[in-house]
Length: 238
Figure 1 (cartoon, helix red, strand yellow):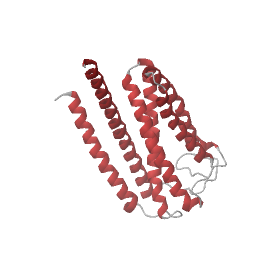
Figure 2 (cartoon, helix red, strand yellow):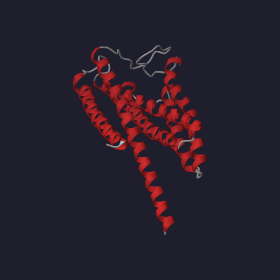
Figure 3 (cartoon, rainbow, N blue to C red):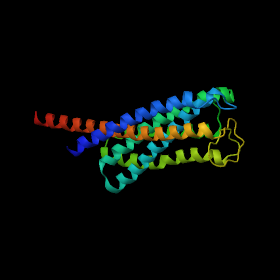
Figure 4 (cartoon, one colour):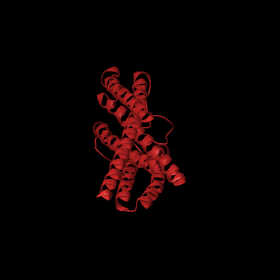
């Protein structure tokens, strides 16, 4: 059995595993954990909210690693990983924002408020959307890959700022699930018992899903690149 076939089988197995984990996570979200003491049923949204944010963190982190590796080696496989991380991270970031809005409406009585945390995550999303625009605006492949690598590393600062802002700013109302905070957030809840179990299971699930999605996106890009090279070879022979 060739190495590529082995990798395909491993990816297929992990994909099925991720699907099973997702189904189990949704069952836990809906049936295993009961309504939260103060938030009621809407608290169930927070498991997907936090899980998707972790997925974005891991995907954007992969872009940082890929950017550093590309600048050191100039190997195009790292550029492929970088753009895959940004695309998957943007998808997870969108889920984070939408689920946050769904949670905020009954808890804060508004879909959106320019709280420091919400403002920072909006800036983060725009920063990574600009990454895609940067790639589309540079025609030279080598220059595009080099600029994208540098930008992908720098843009990670917007994500780190989003993580630490709720622990530094006293005027934020966004709840802090873990760690200290100087604020008095609205909508906090105690992470214990079934809430803790469900939260950790969702975080693990979304971590596995992130790996699977990034891997599939890399494989898709490799297939597109091979198809493009083959097309150029055929045209050259005509």
